[in-house]
Image 1: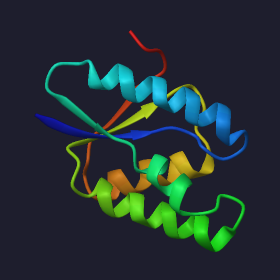
Image 2 (image 1 turned 90 degrees about the vertical axis):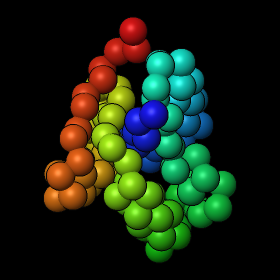
Image 3 (image 1 turned 90 degrees about the horizontal axis):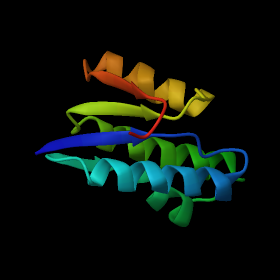
Length: 104
């Protein structure tokens, strides 16, 4: 089994972005041998997106989880500031980054 971190924009239209992210998680779950991790779902419930300190705390939590994943999957066409930070972090930890623009 491969543990993959699903990276997808959340900030902005949070409800729509989470809806899109949930599609990516369902898609990845159906792939053989893939266990997707999407810590921003937990962060959105536990931390306020509108409070910069809480948002950062949730983001930092996600980065700690990323260290244990075999790959980072960047899902969708938009690379936001948060997504870019996750990409940079993965590269720093030598975690392969895979870009998925469309669900297949």
